[in-house]
Image 1 (cartoon, rainbow, N blue to C red):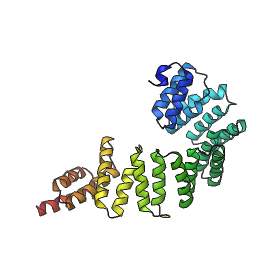
Image 2 (image 1 turned 90 degrees about the vertical axis):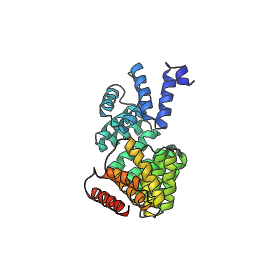
Image 3 (image 1 turned 120 degrees about the horizontal axis):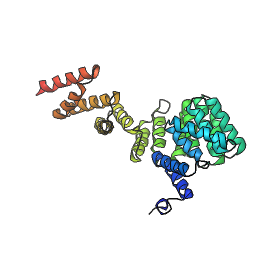
Image 4 (image 1 turned 120 degrees about the vertical axis):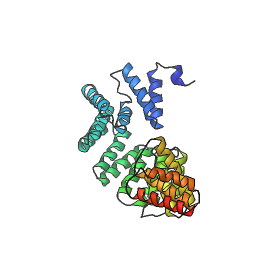
Length: 306
């Protein structure tokens, strides 16, 4: 039995559980717990910075706006309130005002880690790479185990087309957060870039991302395309098939589905598995453009060879 089940009315236990879910990227569970805390204590300030991060990531403008206006009216001279206001302005696209709020938070508490990291994110949005790197370095100086700052520096150097630096910082982030698929996907993308062109290292990173869940669905299509570019068609077919299953389960339509169907149809035809190739082609007949024409050509090739 968990502590939350044993002490359901304890704000301290609920806040700890909410932060744990937040750190594990279980944002829905964390949001529910923070909303329960607010329902019990509408004037609460502690933990509202993390709650505002969740609302920011989920583009939940209305509740973030309500939270920001409440804290601005009651506790505006606290670092947490400034952080919430910064997220509010950031979500509105007012990045300069967001930076101003994070700076105010840092004047109130120089070692307030979240403000340094979030300010770095805002500078990235403003395309101010030197300021972003300074903010992330300050975050690391406060807490060298803050993976978000290392990850942010990796992103910034990647934007600057400096892949060797980006790999270094992404690797630091991955060491601190080895079970987070985003770290491995970012590292894989760096290895895959023209500046490094290390496809097998990219494959290894994407496989690590896949092994750890890959909620964003980044690794599967990239693994499929990488194996295809390396001429490893059987491996490419495996990952295209897995990606197609994922897309079908999510009821998605679009270019990724068409690409997977077309490759799988070609591969099945080349392997002599004509029934499977025909099944993929039948789905492509509902798609317009070159994919439709190629599906018809594959069907003609199958029938002529029968």
